[in-house]
Image 1 (cartoon, rainbow, N blue to C red):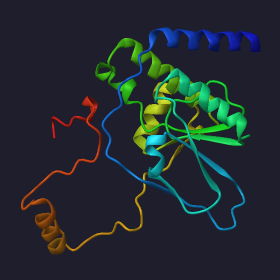
Image 2: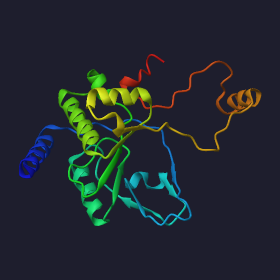
Image 3: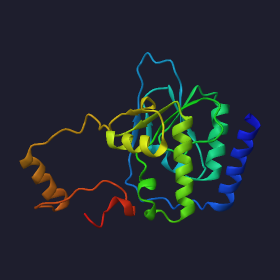
Image 4: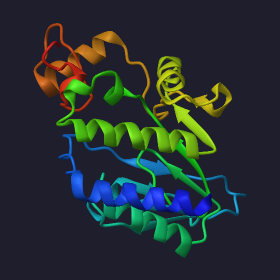
Amino acid sequence: CMCMIILFRCFLLFFFFLMIRRPPRSTLFPYTTLFRSNKNDCHRYFLFCHPGEYNNYLVDSQNFIRVADNSPKYSIRELFTLSSKMRRFKLDLFYAPHYVTPFFRPCKTVVTIHDVIHLLFPEYLPSKVAYYYARFMLMFAARSARKVITVSESSKKDILSHLRVPPEKVVVIYNAVDEKFKPMKERRFSKLLSINFQINGDYILYVGNLMRHKNVVGL
C-alpha cells in the first residue's frame, strides 16, 4: 500500500513537471515581518525565505535563524528543496503560511489556507491546468497537515465544503496588526492626508494585490 502511495506521488510530480507553467508573481505591496519569542523560549526556529526578501524578515532573538531558499514560488524545485531543508535541520514541526507544501515531509505540518478563491472562481486562473494544480495542492495540504489555520469563519466554511476536512481540524485565527497602529483623531488624520498625499476629500484605501479576482476595477 505504501509503495502504491509513493508511486502515485511520483507520477503526480512527473505530471506537474511536464504540464505546469509557474504562474507569474503577483504584484504585492512590500511588507516587513517581525519575529519575536519569549525570553524563556528554548526552541529554535528556521525561517526559509527567498534571498530577495531576506531583509523583510526581522528577528529580535537568537532563536530565529534565517535560511535562504532560491527556489521559485509555485515551482517543482520548491517542493524538493524545502523537503531537503526539513531533513537537514531536523525539524519537529513545519509551518507553511501558504497551501503549497512539499509532498515528502519528515515532520508534522501546520498550514495556513487563507481562502479557496481558485476553486470558487476558476475563471480567473490562466488555464485549466492551473485550476487542477491549485485544487490538488489545496486538498493535499489540508488533508495531510495536522492543523489548518484560516483567517475567517467564511473561509473556514469554504474549506470544509470544498476540501472536505473535519471541522475540528480547521482553526480560525484572525489577521492582526502591530501595536503601533492606533486610532488617530480625525482632524489630525485629515491634515496628514492633505500634507503627505494631497488627499482632501473622500477616498478608498485598497491594500491588496492587483489580481483580477480582487475586483480592483469595481473599486
